[in-house]
Length: 414
Image 1 (tube, rainbow, N blue to C red):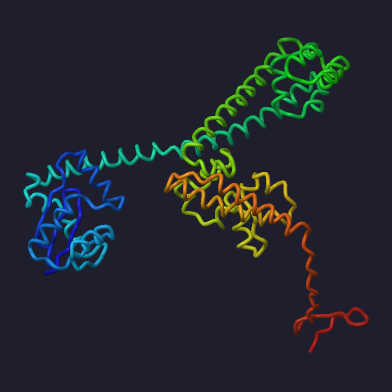
Image 2 (cartoon, one colour; image 1 turned 30 degrees about the vertical axis):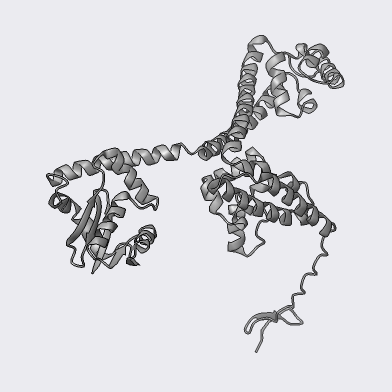
């Protein structure tokens, strides 16, 4: 006898070829337990009702079952059934189309309205639990943190450029003497008027004596305009807001380092917490990064250049954001692609281990990567010889095209 096995929120049911119920095992009536069973089905697990139903079918002498998932097929095969997998078969579709009617006939609900009310509540609870589980994934917290850092970097660069231009009206020489944005912002925030740029104050802020002496001397001889407290105060307000953003960025960096050490220790060991979080952000999640091949990991962040190369036939990019890895961007041009490829291969392994096993093999991966980088530097110490460009033969003019004769008159080739 051949039956079709269907799994639903109300339970697991066995149907014959005409769609009539042969056997039925109900799911838990409790909303919490029923939702947990539904989550198991979505995750590829076999619910308890299905296991009980298989035992019942065995006692009834059923020899062949048609199921919709490989997990259920394995369980049925282990119990001695002849199994075939047909997802979305007509019998299962027909049962789900009339599931409200079947729920009443099987005595689970008193009416179809009661069933639909229960289904509505279960759907809301199922969605709520799925959202909660997604929110609990800490790899997404690291991805959001690195995106926040990128936004802060854009904002601080914009504010620092405006601050330099604004404060240069009062102290233009400081723009060349202090090139670091964060130091410049700190000086304006703490000192304000250029008269406060004394050697003692600058040394207190952490500058070396020689640097402090240069800045103090420039402040005394400055060609800038004299500003009142009323004019300097808004400049200092902008500087203090920018300084606060720098402080927030440092706090976020520490937070991402702690989260990445927890959720992706192997990736963190390879490329550090910030670059690792940026890779997770570009992929969408740690699990999505683990599913990517090494060739895709290598060019993450360079999608525009990659698709432009595919469209125009140009050279594809050799690296994406992993260019930030020191051994990539500090190496000669002809070595970068090979080092990026080796790094991407180790990152692909690290992501899979972090996402699916949780074991720590970071030290081993770092050691193997360093050995490979040293090998690349020895094998390709010198740049490769340039290939001679192929000589393009000049094509003769096409038939019917005009060409100039001796006197410059246009003649047509025959």
